[in-house]
Length: 81
Image 1 (spheres, rainbow, N blue to C red):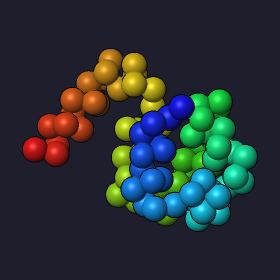
Image 2 (image 1 turned 120 degrees about the vertical axis):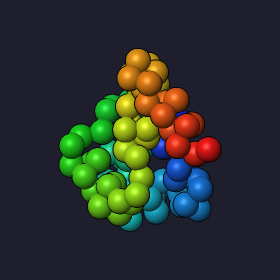
Image 3 (image 1 turned 135 degrees about the vertical axis):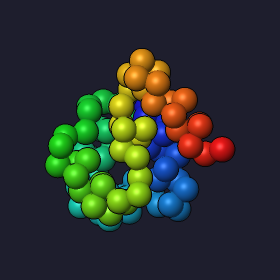
Image 4 (image 1 turned 135 degrees about the horizontal axis):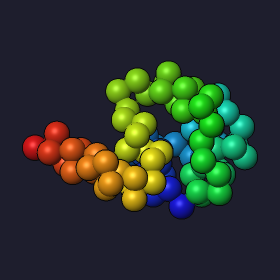
């Protein structure tokens, strides 16, 4: 499961159905990304970013191992201070 994406959706106060409709993807496609059954397509991320331009899609969609390797996880923590 992509806990970061799920947490983001829940902070928006949306169900999976509502979020998928809002960003313009099918419920099935959204569920598969949130449940980590598939990686998001370029179009998925593009639609997400168009609705949430201030969101950091790297932090939402990249695997934690990649974030740690690139030190993006610590960068996020540093930016919040």
